[in-house]
View 1 (cartoon, rainbow, N blue to C red):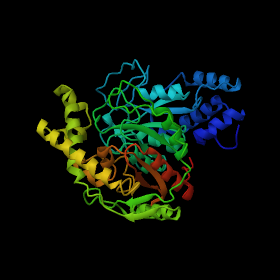
View 2: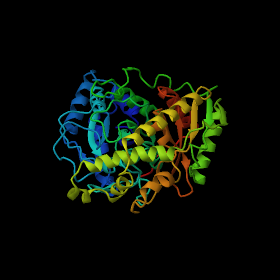
View 3: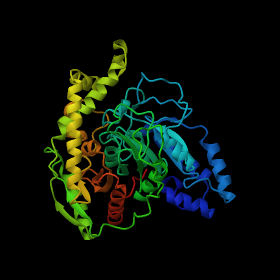
Length: 463
């Protein structure tokens, strides 16, 4: 066994240990399992565990010992957010109203991870139907931040963010319709990538299908790229899926940012709030990118007010979701979800056509902006992590004041964006920054994130 706990090793290091024979998938799984047993009762990151993981690890160990690994992730543990189907396990979506019957087929991204040899160890918590940022739901309760249990890990990929920060394995699947990968990544001090829309196929599609993506949540940028390589494979079930691009997304990740043009975004279409810690993180990242050879300056893409646009798309999707359930059952839903639905009950089909037209105009504005700039740098979140036990009040306002003012724009424009750690806030919790690139240029956000990771190394919590 290595000196470092295998539960804390990146996937790349696990694979190197397997190849050398200094570590086995069984040993890695056992180390992760010990950590989950010890720490998860206070964190609550999992909905369910996979009882077959031990047998899968034993089979992987035998393959490695025979010199016949089965794919680039053979024996690497992975968790799946409970909005995503895993065959043989229910997909409860954080709700008491969902079907407890097990899913009959793997979602496309799960199929890709399994084909690469990854071992699914469990399903992680989500806010109900992925609707909000604080990490709680009516079905499994509150998920807490490993850095400090008084705080939320964020959402809606709350369990994935908490599991990554707590050392419950190296690879975690999140989904993101308005910031649900990047917000928990920011508050948990990990790397979270929202890929280009359609890069990672999804099925069945959820309530936020026109803006939602699935992506990796990891402790290192290279692991993020490695995981994306397995997830981003064409699947005909998803009508939005991009053509297959069977690249290893690590191939260009060490090329740096020399001569890339980086725009610091201070206004995402409205005066978005940002606290001093988040603002300082952006300034620090700008300085480090400039020192690495990038051309960095402030610039404004001239976006429309994204608040009205996203809040209507978000709200109507939730109204439609609520309407799927008979009136007597709706009292079992998160009260905040019902509040948002009530605000959008009168939206018309014409309204939605108008909002789609505005979304396309915003996409065009960003496409034109990226003719001048390779990357956009801005905050991931407006403030540090919220208290885990605080009730969700006035969610329509909270969306813009506490949750997603800096993340939702890139869902609307469908371009790739990544959140990475950038030091610590005054309260000892992680700070972060966000980078975005033109559509299809996921390689650029990974390169820039890797540059910052080199320049500003970040340590996980000592648990």
